[in-house]
Image (cartoon, rainbow, N blue to C red; front, side, top):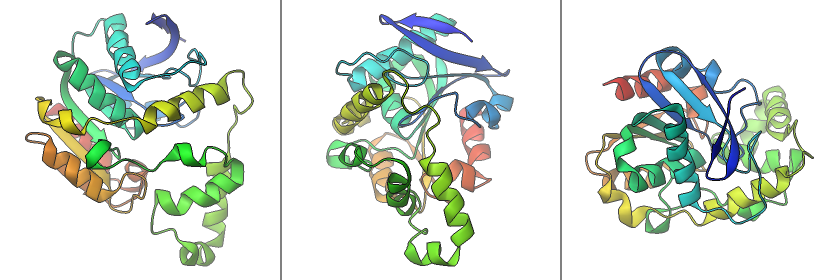
Length: 265
């Protein structure tokens, strides 16, 4: 598997597909070893796709030092340098959308079109759900807490009426096959520290490339009203909502085609 030394750290990344160049930036806890990953999605059939484990995650280095959102953005720009891309399409999901905002603001010439999916600007525009406040919740306890937030339709009434489906969701959400790896807890904690300080609100009007803001109608992590505010502050941004929660891309079959069409426009 390819690795790159970027900003003094060793990064794991993967590349596949043909077509326009697309950098995919993953969300909180993103790890390319967790299957199915983005390379199993329609994106890999539509683009020359690059994705990576961000600092503190997966098979990338996990120094136990403070990380900043600027660090994450500069890592992404350095990866573009490493693969020889002067510019690229960018799709950032959840935390990755926060990184993508910093990337386009700090390195505007590198991003030609941008999709910000189920994410937030922070600051006065509103923040995504404060994961740093539930860092102590693990396994099934964390799953029980997050499922009705990730998709607000999945409340207690829904869980009681769909016991089998709910049990499978608990199992999937609670699973952490790489728990206990050296540095994993520390890297995850450092990501949440940086995430809690994310704030691009005052700078969003400086984004000049075409932007699509996309989200789920039932997302309790990146709230629809927050996405509306963000889209309204980015000049010319498009806003699309889909039939789902925080995982709307997996829940609404129209989501991937819509984002692909925007990126290829």
